Image: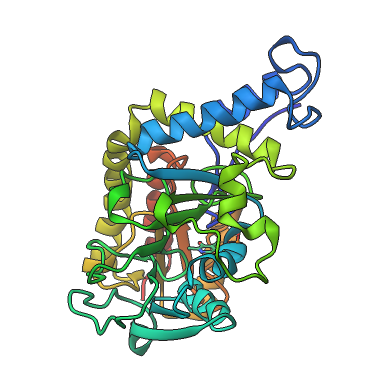
Length: 363
Ligand SMILES: *Cc1c(COP(=O)(O)O)cnc(C)c1O
């Protein structure tokens, strides 16, 4: 069968490295001579134990995770963490949230079920097109944590400086910038990410948590599968984990190492994003929607200002093998997600296509 791969600009689930997909295909029927696929094997088997342990170690190596942090593989994706964080961390019953988009807003709304939520900063006034100054926020002295969404997948903004939390633990949803660059883990109480954006297939969230935040005396209504202590004490194997997803994440970690690690990924991501932003900054037709100082390297929203023209652009791009460029339904326009697995050639192909489209649609 003739194979034709597209450049997939989806925000998630998103592109995976082709090398990883090929390796998974090679392993599909017979994983390393054990006569079965990873999908079929027991999560208690020696083979799977080796897979999850290697995945954790490779992740620790990539991020230089300091001693005193646990790595948890949990099901339920991002939305489950919106609930798990307040259930596990609210001791005083208070948390401060910075709202920079839909995902932070949803997280705050979920947390309101379990305690008092203060919105200490927001960029809603300008449709979330920037990251507010977070150097001196009115942090509640009883706040159990300060919560951010570090890279705003929908609006295309990213914190380039972490907030001053005045000593409170920082909890960050890093779903859409996870492993795009080196995070200094020691600055976080928790950083967690749904893996389907930049790390692997859908079905798992990875939680990196400082051990002192893992407590026994948590909200007694916490479902056991959301309990960080139970998950940590059982090395993410309390119940059946998303085995195949963890296996693919492990292959991605090995791929990242083979590429030179996260500093090299960051260099590539900066280079790729620059190609697109430089074009947008001089285009007469397309316009980026984010304040330059808050731009994300991962998600790049842009518009023409004309809905019909936007729709035609998306349609023609799709026909040219540049797919999933439609913006989020709440924003409109276009969005190009250019995660680790998007090659530079894919971004160049997009920019060439945009140049041609601009020439053919002079206003
Ligand atoms: C996609 C996304 C989520 C939601 O993840 P689900 O796994 O679909 O629940 C949360 N936060 C961010 C930043 C995201 O990009």
